[in-house]
Amino acid sequence: MKIISFDCYGTIVDWEKGIISSLRPIFEKYEVDITDDEILEIYSIIESRLERNYIPYKEVLRKIVIKFSDYFDFDLERGEENVLLNNWANFELFEDVNETLKEIKKRGYKIAIISNVDNDLFELTKKKFEFEIDYLITSEMVRAYKPSKIIFEYALNAFNSKKDEILHTAQSYYHDIIPAKELGIKTAHIRRRGFGATPRVEIVNSDYEFENLRETLSIL
Image 1 (cartoon, helix red, strand yellow):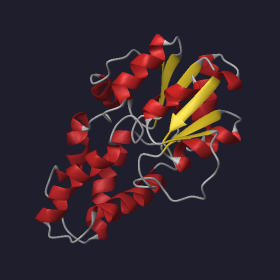
Image 2 (cartoon, one colour; image 1 turned 30 degrees about the horizontal axis):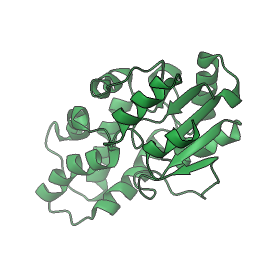
Image 3 (cartoon, one colour; image 1 turned 90 degrees about the horizontal axis):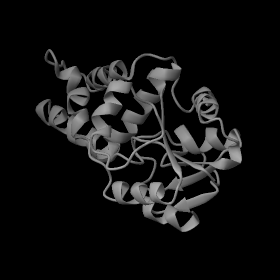
Image 4 (tube, helix red, strand yellow; image 1 turned 90 degrees about the vertical axis):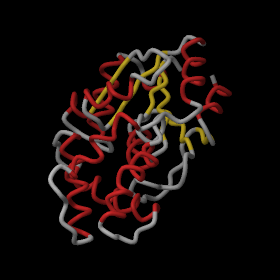
């Protein structure tokens, strides 16, 4: 392997914590009785439907909040549809990220990010990185969202590498593990939590299963 590619939100960024912390005040304000797990499950359904056809991810984030208000029958005040977007810069990295990816770079591997995001939103997240990335592939660049194989095919062309030189590392079976494996790319699944904010799918066998990112160092 020469390149280790990573999903960003859910694998590098504690995306689900960010989603819950952003939406919880809205639900409390409008007296919606909903658990964290229910927030994430409904989020996964809404988001996956919105991403079937490309629209900017900022618009996806706004529409998700609006869909929640429709689902639970409350009227948002002006600007509240931006709550996820406005809180995006506060989404934190998992605690094992900087240490692990700095070590991966030190060992001579290239690092790529393949993410369902707009470029400017990623730049807000990148400010938290203590490591350099070699490649960035976003949905904005490709005009498609994972699990579309288009985004992975675009990445392969950008890397100019053979498939067996790449390991794709991710938390989501739906967005990452399944389409990458179908293209013949080796995969490492990170068990951040259950399905969380990703659609439930039949679990497939990834090439590697890890509890956290640090464990990926054992195969390098």
